[in-house]
Length: 136
Image (cartoon, rainbow, N blue to C red; front, side):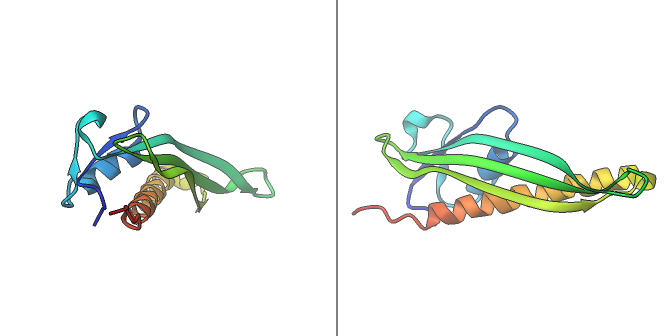
């Protein structure tokens, strides 16, 4: 359970992590607010970035593996603009083996790996928020 009765989530447009956080927050007793002025806390997703790098090549120069990365930078502030969780970063990565003959299947696998990393990042952020001890 979160130590706030209401939370507002702000993020750059298109942040999948923010969308998942809103979905998770809607399923717990903490109320998700439409604006920061009405919330006890504001969770700012500062950056939500995906990246893909070639990890290895075959002898013929074709890609064999990619490293998929997700970087999420966030901060939590209270209603008085006090920093509750300072700017923090979550970096996750997964390895995707690649095969030119199965492009569509590998694209689907890549999407699933990114979804897994996004769910992992959301869970980490929520655990950190749950661990907050508010002064009485």
